[in-house]
Amino acid sequence: MWRTAALIEGAWEQSEPIVIEGTPPSLVQVLGTVRTAMTDAVNLRNHLEEEESVASTGKFVGSHDAIARWSALAEAEAGEYKDDTPGGLEALEEALAYFSETPTDGRPETLAWHDHTTAIFRIPPGARHVTIDYTPGQQDENRLLRYKDRTTAEHELETILDARGYHGPRAPSSITGVPCAGRDGDSARRLLEYQDTSSREFCAGLSGGSRH
Image (cartoon, rainbow, N blue to C red; front, side, top):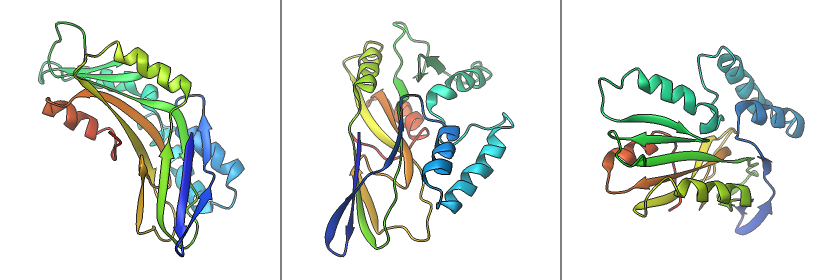
């Protein structure tokens, strides 16, 4: 569940984001929703259509595509360098696992994935601050429990808003929340061992902004 509010002239105003859920997020889903539910968002639609034309060549991953949609590709590409670098990536269910070296127990140091939800937020004119709150659904919580079985007690959970961009003439002075976000984004989660620096760097490359 997503909730958002904007501070306009000293008063908080609640608004309903446009939510897409039920399957791993994708650029195609977002573009389809913008075309049908946001017919006035011409700049956003044009931006997404331009990106779709590039992604459809098969050479690039759509910016709104969940990890589940490209984890196998990442594993295959990482495998090309396995003789030159320690560790590697592995697609596990809908997640992407990172191993800094060959594990003895089969447990990754980091496991990252996206929940089955995407939200598009309309930021009203005059907004000085925006808060965004996200509560995972039961399906997403069940997935988390499965993935916890693949990790250890030392792993910690982070929920990240994988913000994909702000599209508009002017951004508000700040956008905060749990998690905090821009105009549109997906919810990504990861389990990682904090004592391992390489794990943190790997996850930071996947997405930005976090809720601990």
